[in-house]
Amino acid sequence: MYNGIGLTTPRGSGTNGHVQRNWAFVRPGKKESASVTYKTDEDLAKLDAQANKGPNQEILDHERKRKIEVKCAELEEILEKQGYPLNEIMDKVDAYRLKLLNVGREDVPRDEFGRIQ
Image (cartoon, rainbow, N blue to C red; front, side, top):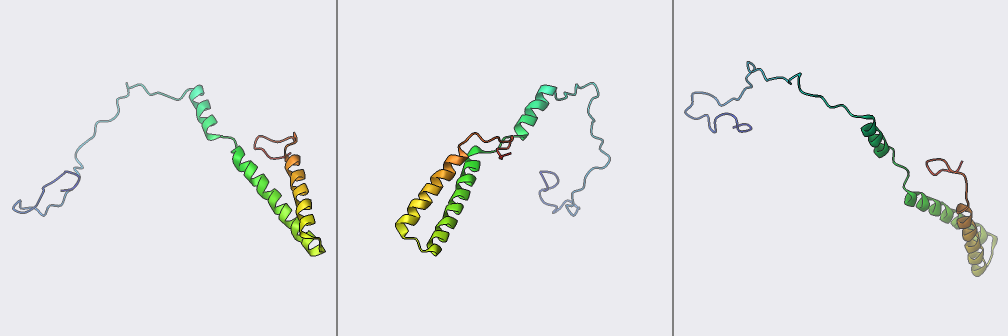
């Protein structure tokens, strides 16, 4: 049996049980009198608005913070190579981190994707 069509078992039927499509059957077509509904301009505008979402602000903030931490780690390595004591390195790195965090908060002109212009 194939998709509920055919014999459950071909035994005793005189056939091998192979199921074929009936090529002589003509399916009824769509009625031309049926109304076809087309999308309106409002529907198209809604679909465009859903497809063109803005960037996720949390992801942008995370990326900015990650770049700041990379810069702080690079500064820390430079200061260690120059031989500064550990407490002075931490003070300078913390001050640099605060400076970078406050720079990102200013009203910098950005495009519609949140990138600095």
